[in-house]
Length: 267
Image (cartoon, rainbow, N blue to C red; front, side, top):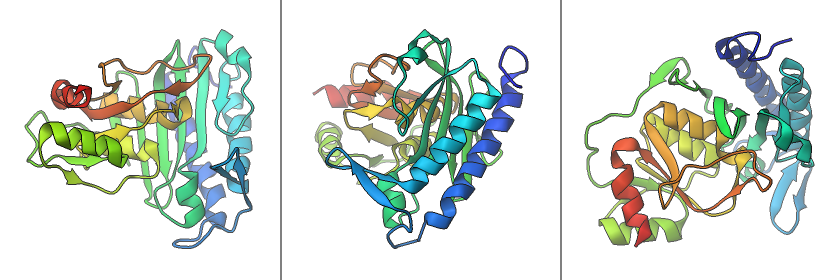
C-alpha cells in the first residue's frame, strides 16, 4: 500500500501514471477515429454526454487509486458525490474521460485526468491523452513534464499575434481589448487546453464558467509547474475540494503575461 506519508510523491506519481495509461487502454476499443463511438451513449440532464467507457474507466480508477492511497477522499465526474471527501486532507480528483463529446464523436482531443489534492491544492497531476500518445505530469515543486521532457514556459515575449483558444465570446472579449489574435480551434478537452498552454502551443487559454474540479485540477498543477497561471479574471487561483466543486470564468497563461491578460478580461 502506498501513501504520501509512507513514500515520496515521486513513487506515487509512477503508480498514477501507470493507472492513467491502463485506463486509456481500456477506452481505446470504444474509440473510432472520425466516427461515433462504439460505446453505449446517454445523457445526464439535457446535454452532458456519458458513455459506457466513462463508467468503465471510473470504476477501474476508483478501485485502483483508492487502493494506492485509501486515506484519500474521492471526487469524480462519474461518481455520486460523497460529502465525506470534505473531511479528508487528501482527495483524488478524477475525470475518467475529459472531453467525452470529443471521444464520442471520434475527435482525438480527450484525456484521462487524475489529480491528488491536499488541503485544497493539487500536489500531483497526471493527464494522459491516448490518441496523441502524450502524458503530462507534475508534482508540486518538482516541475512539469510531457513524455519525460521538461516543460518550461519561456520568459521571452511571445511573437504577436497571441495564439488564443477558448469559447468564442471570451476570445472576442480578449481580442477587443488587446488587438488582433490568432484564433486557435477550441480544444474540446479543457484539461488538454490548459496543458497546451503549459507546453507553449497555446498562449492564452480561456475557460467559461461552470468548469468542475475534475476538469482542471491536474492540468492546473501541470501549468503552474511549467511557469504558468490559471486564475479567475480578478487574478485569484482556484481552490479545490469545496462543497460545490465548480468555478467561474478563468484564464490560463504564462506567468509573464498574466497581469496584462487578466487586465484584458476585466474590461
